[in-house]
Length: 358
Ligand SMILES: Cc1cc2nc3c(=O)[nH]c(=O)nc-3n(C[C@H](O)[C@H](O)[C@H](O)COP(=O)(O)O)c2cc1C
Ligand code: SF4
Image 1: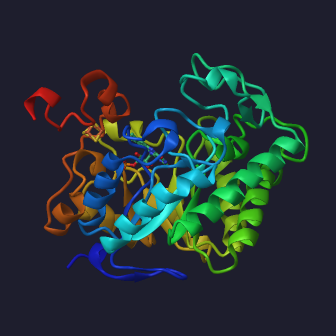
Image 2: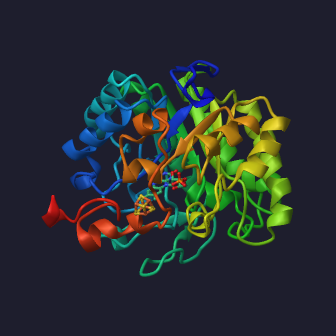
Image 3: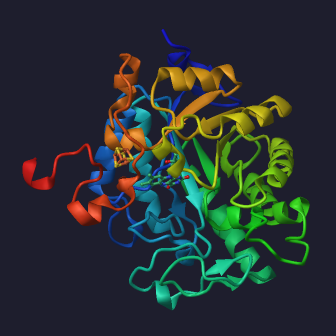
């Protein structure tokens, strides 16, 4: 049996295997961020098919931190009931249930009503086409967002999730703070890696205090940067060494260019840096990005990863866990059309039948 499908012990959680469904927003969110029946069905299929841990789509911790596209919310108690059904469904399938919580910063899609909100970011900037400039956050804004993360984490706990994952990756708020190409602040929240880490650190500290020392907290973080990437490696290693002090359950390593790399046929995109960091810290590190079969995952495990995450293979085939366990490989071509296909063709993936053919 592949090592991927062996049981693994993290700090507090024991997973039946090392396969993780990475956080993936789907197009099925109900009105106003509630969990829909289609989402519950999706989580049921994923969790019933040999997955060790399922990380939910990111849920926004404040209303203006909503990325759009029907994103689920966790900024109010009204979301707890639906999310607790998600947690139960995932756990009933034998997987650990982890909710990813996030704030999109200025990087939102235009959606009805979004122009009425004041977007927040480390600096004043237009982040996305057709969207107003985000406001540079002051201390009050930071308190407000920090409180959003704290309350979101407490709600996830109340909903019965086995843990949370704080989204420090891709283009969203906390990664905007960590990214020297974006965070040009000249106060104590910018200037150098220590300054850029300050706000994410304050969020993590407050969340840890709120959920207690034993509740599993994961993070997802970028290992690279769009400019001056060689210099950023030092920042990344600094962030990882700081994160090591939080008693985290695991750190999932991604990158800013988290999907396009696969279009060139690359695999295990961020393994080199993830592996370097894993060797330097005690917290379990795991990889996301470009794994499509057991060989890709074994390479990651051999390089010091504790778990192997996949996202798009679960879009293409939500039962991919069972297929991998049977030695098959994912049919996902990494084309990334899943970001928009549903709106164009009414299907999620190029491998799915057109709606009229179903
Ligand atoms: C449609 C779509 C939605 C995504 N939503 C999220 C999300 O909610 N949170 C997150 O951290 N990453 C999200 N991602 C990124 C994936 O988790 C993952 O990092 C990326 O797709 C690379 O992994 P893969 O090669 O296995 O797909 C999303 C990716 C896609 C394609
Ligand atoms: S649309 Fe392309 S990238 Fe997305 S899941 Fe399908 S095959 Fe993979």
